[in-house]
Image 1: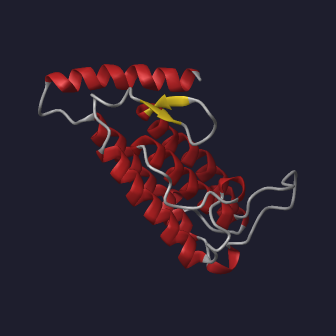
Image 2: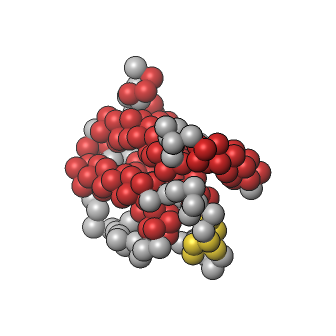
Amino acid sequence: MTRVLTLLAISTAAASLFAADPSAPSIGKIYDAQIRSIEAEVVPLAEAMPADKYDFAPTTGNFKGVRTFSLQMTHIATVIYEVSAASLGEKSPVARGNDDNGAASIHGKEAVVKYLKDSLVYAHKATAALTAANMMDLMQSPFGSQKTTRLELLSEIPWHTYDHYGQSVEYLRLNGIVPPASR
């Protein structure tokens, strides 16, 4: 909660400063840069995992019940779709699936990578619609009955994605693959 409030305070202050300077980037463009960062980190990670390892989940240690690599990627994408749709005031264009992992029919590296990339296209649409004027609008959360701001919804994309990105990096390393960002 503290992280969200700090981000909100910084974003609000930045938005008011940018509103005074027409040459400054918009709040939507700032958030869109975070989506581009995710594209530069997470998509290459998804592409680096061999297709025959997409069903990999660690078993040595305390990993009972963890998602497979494939489910890590579809979970990231499904949450991106969910919060992007909520910030736009739209119904999510994808099935939520079990545990927010997306439709069970999304199977195989090619389909998973496409699903991930498509979710990021949708996130770009959501960030393009974020403005200093609407960022504090209350929107229905996709994860419960509460309402939250557009800004808070879109701030979930980077922190949630990078949480699962970190886990997925370990999946690659456990398979002897150096993640693209570490090469």
